[in-house]
Image (tube, rainbow, N blue to C red; front, side, top):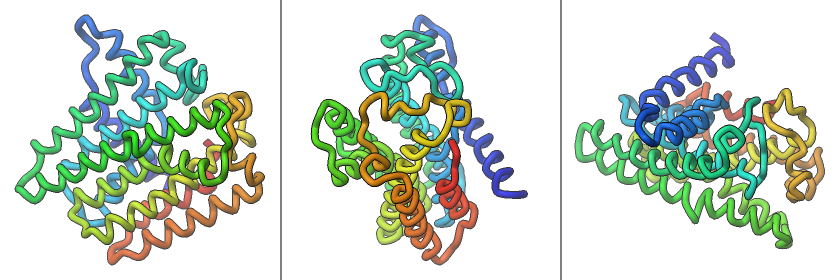
Length: 299
């Protein structure tokens, strides 16, 4: 089985887990739940839950305790996309090749769908306590929940979104500020994925911090590649409008450093991340290949 076949199989496994934890579309709030499910099941790379599971396996993790966190992180990621697409934010009408949530359900319902997914994420992650076999696994779950909250919150993804909005409103954007935005808006959830995988598998503190650093590099490289694709790709390939950064007057890494230097930075940061991932006693070749694939992705 080649890499793409393995990746497709792992995406299918994530889809099964998501369907297990998503709510049924009934009751007076059925349209809200429909909007939530529409957002989460719109497809996508499922990168974050896969990174979480592979990090878990890297440190010898086993069992299903990781699954509620995999679903929770994907819910958080998708809630952020729902809100990002809103008219008050990026005002995008297409994502993953179909209309964005607010275009289908209205912006008010899209706001609620994002709110619902964020709350459901922590409700789902807390279900991992029911799967803990002993006190040690309970403590790992507590640590994992803290990481999830921190990396998704005001000192993580939401903080990055705040800085991103302020940059759009005229604040002078330096490379330092841009990296802060990328670190928090994009890398923070990848850090959550890889750190939680390591924590739930029982990795030591040094290894958890090393995974945080590797994930930082992966997240920054991933976002720079996203900026590159916004310039070089097409809507058909990307599944969402290209040129939206230009349309929204966003200052990106590509604008600051040019296309070629941006491409080199993606390669450099990915190489550093791979070096960390290959330094542990056990190797996860699929995880390393997944990170490497981010350098050359086209969507």
